[in-house]
Amino acid sequence: MSKSKIHYAWVILIAGILIAGAGQGVILNTFNAFVKPVTLDLGFSRAEFTLCSSISLIVGVLTLPYLGKLFQTSRLKLVVCACAIVASLVPLGYALCGSLWQFYALSAVLGLAVNGVGLTMIGSVITNWFNRKRGLVTGIAFAGSGLFGAVMLPIVTSLIEASGWRFGFTVIAATAAVLFVPSAFFMLRATPQEMGLAPYGDSAGQTGEPAAQNGMTRAQALRTPALWTCMVGLFLHTGVCIAINANCVAYLSDLGHSAQVTGLVASVVLIFLTIGKIGFGEVFDRLGDLKGALLMTVMVTAAPLLFLLARNTFFAFFSVALLGLAGGGGSVVASHIIASYFGRKNFASIFAIAMIPGQLGSAIGPVFAAWIFDLFDSYTVAWVLCGVFGAVSIALFILSALSARKMPKYD
Image (cartoon, rainbow, N blue to C red; front, side, top):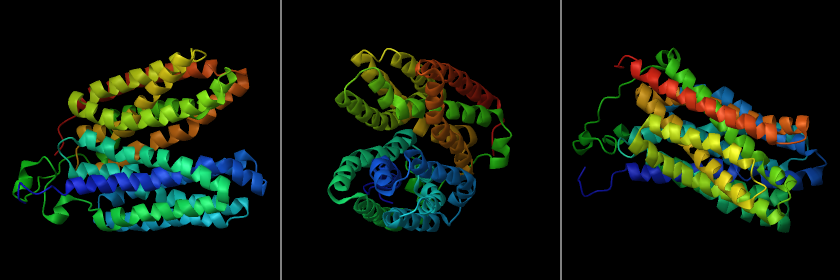
């Protein structure tokens, strides 16, 4: 490949942005806009309808290890294309639903497909294609979910108000398909070897001779304390971030803030989450896994404690901005750590396992904070415990890094 030509890795980055934008951004991040209109129209309780998200998440967690194995085979593109078709059709199916069981059944189908076009797949492909700037590039690709979600959410809200929730789901399906077709079907390539290239930043790429992929097997990685301490740290980190994010509007409203302030705070979280994904990608590239993880976990420890002061508007915005940055870091830290500690030989398979705790944290965190509120009629205890969990995550990431440095070098 001539030095004057643009490396195909940059096309892969664009594909990753579009796939993250379609799957996570357009399909998943807009679901909350449908809760009120669907429940009012069909007579479901909000708890019954929001269970759709939990069903998708649980099915996704159960299938993620299997998908992780497929991501490291030549069938990756076929899997991604199949999942893209299914994920696009599910919102169209939602538009035709009239019964709760139909929503649940389609949500289970979405759970089977969503990780095939999700961050785990994108992180695996980015790691295959980039040696240099891998953290930054992963963050940029992941940021597609926040960017497309931020753009699509107000559009969908307006469409629902004007034409109804069924039309809104139809537009979601069409938009996702428009984004998936060029990215998943035409632009995506699982590895640079498919095109006779080496990863971007690999000197072998100038000759077309890809470097060997070294690393542990998944079975070997699962026997290391480094992986398990890292995963528990990811569970606590993600749980804290999502617990606050999901309950911040209710908490600020309880404190007496206006609807304008609470709505703006919710937008600030999303904006800083996007900034955090990109920014922490660069942080991990420059500072390494341990220093980057420490900065991220210190932020997530401070955010809930500062949130206790959120009666003051400045602290309300400052704490959620800090939380957004830390949450963005949590999106990219697993990709960087797994590649750094365990190599690339079985990266996709190990990475898929490492992403499970984050998904579980996303499911448990909001319920935990709400349960604490119901118990004490206040979020104060919840935010204090979140600060404690954040501090524990600091210790776990330190232990993970120290354990990794004592591991024998992989082949």
